[in-house]
Image (cartoon, helix red, strand yellow):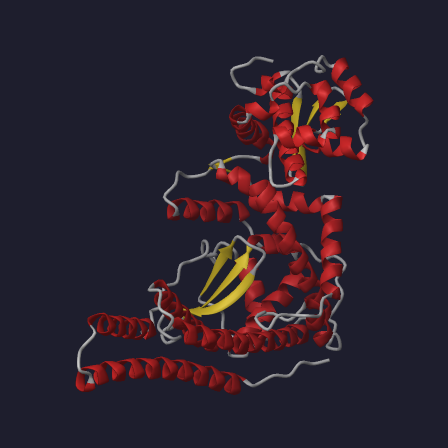
Length: 491
């Protein structure tokens, strides 16, 4: 089922009409306000100073907000050098030729599961240049053929004139938002007509965006093959959620400590875990069942995009298609340059490079020790052998770890008790094992303790109270108080 939509000329005309409509609305409101001011001065018996100031302030705010701003482009990451990455640029050039488009002037590294094109710089698109952004984690997710399909989709936005239209839509959106924000900041009710127009503008322009996505998909499927586009779309959507989990649970906490482990190779390890793959498959299945969308969505639902290209040429099947990250010669240098830019932009010290296996001792143990020191009161008096009975006593959990609900109290208890156990086990010579795709745990000879899942496992019966106490007694842990996690106490 092919999706049809307005031509570029039609979309451009609509964008111009909406832009003119907004300026007409704004100038009409200013005109009415100034006429009221004129009438007050000419026909009124007296002049209300506050009303005059209010009218002039609102009118001036609207007029100032209407002035287009120059597009100040801030690079999202380092620029990829064609001389250093010839194979990558050869692939981009191949797709540019296949779609009959000129190459972007610059291609930048993006730290997300993302690929995009735009015309940036100038005013309302005048004086702009073509640029492209490619996410390093995206290249770790897609095969070369799938990446070629994604590239063809992005060049489809050039092909369809979307990037020429984009600056007009973006600038109009910015003007509307700026007007609403400036008026609302003054406490003026005059922002409400602009809020109504802004919502209408978003609905219309986002509907245009969805049609642009269909057109770009059709071009990509025709040039590279629907098979590769469909597989790529599924991977992009599922891996984006996986990357969020990777960043929030694994990479982000280490980065916040001032250390920088390898981003892409760490993500590869994260993706290799069986339960992460299962979660991604589940996400894909759920997306394939979703057909509803908001009028404010910029992209159509995944199943509708796939359905729209299902009958187009499938393309050659490649059973030995390598990952797209292999197109780059020096991922390490690109990562190093990207995070140097981040540190410089935020005026912080350069990140210390670290391997993932070093994060336990360099990052997590100091962090856990600080948290344990700051939270001694709720854990003091709890011995290792007491933990199973605490799990069964919800009143005691809520008393020690007060929160809005018992579930939140249990979550707080699990986290703080887990941290205290980690600090104590480290003091007693157990070995910390960190995994990118799961919680850290400790080992000693052939024994394992998983502190952060302990309370949950006890509650579910995965670990019995007897087994836990036996393990503790065998290792002289049964009578150890969790307060020994304090840095001033020796284990």
